[in-house]
Image (cartoon, rainbow, N blue to C red; front, side):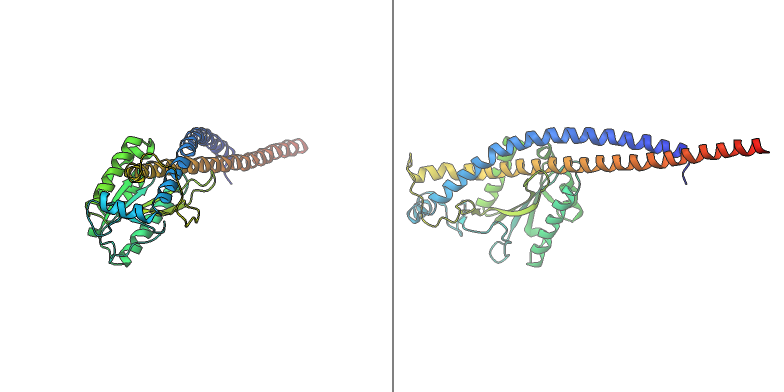
Amino acid sequence: MSSLKEIKSRIASVRNTLKITSAMKMVASAKLHKAQVAIGGKLPYEQKLHHILSGLLQDDELHKAMHDKLGFGNPHGHSTVVLEDIGLDQVPSKDVYPRIAIVAFSSNSSLCGAFNANNIKKYHETIRILEGQGYGKDDIDVYAIGRKMADAVRKSGYDLIGDYPEMADKPSYDQAADLAHMLVDSFCSGEVAQVVLVYSHFASPASQPVVRENYLPLPLHDYDDGVDEPIDYILEPDPLELVRHLLPQVLLLKLYTVLLDANAAEHAARTLAMQIASDNAQDLIAELTLAYNKGRQQEITAEILDLVGGTMA
């Protein structure tokens, strides 16, 4: 059994750790509140824009006009943004998409539970699926947002096309826009045929599921709520001009919203991890205090017995 001095020293050490975890929880909680406000204000706006675009593009005549006048909608042409109705979690086929890009998100630091491990696991799962379909290292471009993901990508043997650790700490609209333009340009030029996002979705403070979804080709029916008939909008200016401006905006906002979503998920995971660590520290302090009191009581009892034995002798 440990001596009383060792137990007392360990109690002091755990209390110091408790102070650190409690402080980190407070900081993470404050950052989470700020991130929730940001994603709460941006997500409905992005989803509504996507919903409007989906409604507009259900019109066959507008599809034809986009193809003829804007160059959109031709899956075999160049300098176009292919418009398809694809599933969010659809894994591409090498016969259809010979080269793809993956944009994977993580945090820059640890102490956030299984947040980074889950994201990295999803990235490795995606790579294994793609390799199983015939993709090689030369067929996959990887962009990492977050230092932990960048390290994992390098360890997996893939070269990073883009590394953006600063965006993981401080989501920036301008940086997200630059990355979105880069991805869209690569897609339109034919360098890549599909762009896949891997990130943690902030479902609630206690739940951050990792999702894999397609960014390009643009899924048209993510938010149409099963509506099959074209939506009769009153538009100004004309629909074609509106789509010309709305489509790039939807693509840009989608990436920025995902960045905010992943950032909120990180802070939620860290808040939960620090809460669990603080609870464990308090439980350990209670156990050590009980052990210390028992040991102290045994010492006192032994001293009394010694005194009584000496008196009787």
